[in-house]
Structures are given as C-alpha cells and as structure tokens.
Image (cartoon, rainbow, N blue to C red; front, side):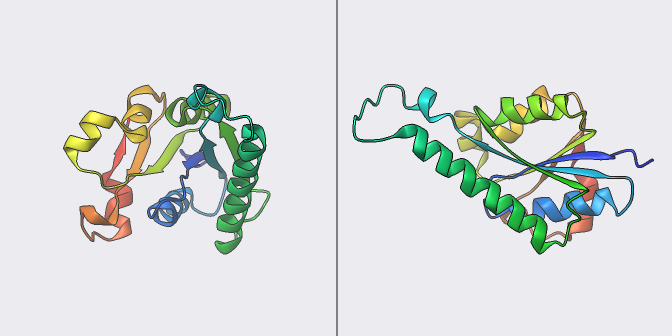
Amino acid sequence: MHPFHTILVALDFSETAGDTLDAALAIAGNRDRRVHLLHVVPDLFKSLQFAEVPVVDWSEIQRDSMETARTQLVTLAAERKLDPLDVTVAVEIGPPASEIVRYANEHDARLIVLGSHGHGVVRRFILGSVADRVLRQASCPVMLVPHHSFGNRPLEDTATSRVSS
C-alpha cells in the first residue's frame, strides 16, 4: 500500500490551487489512494459578530459560499479526470488552519498538501499564515507547494523538496 494512501489537499482557490492539486496527485499516484479535496469557509457569524446589519442574511451568504466552494472543488476534480470513487470533496466552516488539521485527523490523512501565497516574510510574521499554523499543528507530514513568485522550479523538484513532518 502507498505510504500516503490518504492525502488531504487543502485548497483556497488562489493562484497556487492548481499546482497544489497537481503536486498532491503526483505523489498519490494511480493506485491505492484516497484524495480529499477540502476548502474551509470562514465562519461569518464569528468573524463578523460585531456587524449587526439587519438587512444582510449572513446564513444565506455562508450557504452560498459553501455551495460555490463545493462546485469549484468538483470542477477541479473533473478537470483532472479524477475517479469519483477515489476523491472526497468537502467544505468546512471555521478557522482554516484548525479545520484543516481537524479534518486530517478525523479522516486519518497521511499527508496534508497546501499552497503558499508568496507573501513576504515580514507580512507572514505579522499576520501569521494558515500554512505556518498547519505545519505546527498537524500530526502527519505537510507538503507546502510554493507560490510561483518563489521561483520557477519544476513541479517534481517542488513536490519532493517541500515535504515536512
């Protein structure tokens, strides 16, 4: 059995989403694999609890965001001709890093793959980053696929050089 038989691919639909999925699929190979595509929608009720705007239906906005994310994940899987029996599509609500780690633990993921945005060191230090938090909290290896601004290294080099546990 493949050592990374269950791979969680956390996608935020940024510029690195396609590269992130492609890197995960390259590692997964074609046999004995289960790939989970996950997108985390921020919890609008918690992040905007101070905004009491009576004309805005936050629950509908959140449902729309979740449905849009699910459609995008299904589209990404279809574009890569992934067998629906090998792929699970999931959309969760909450803080992205915490939800990614929770989902990985609940589904016994052997590898988490996510993309980097290419933000500078200072900005990442001040704001923190989902990738940094996942790296610190995950109980399985994490592969970070760099943003194209980090250089134009071939995908094969990127996939093998960024695995961290």
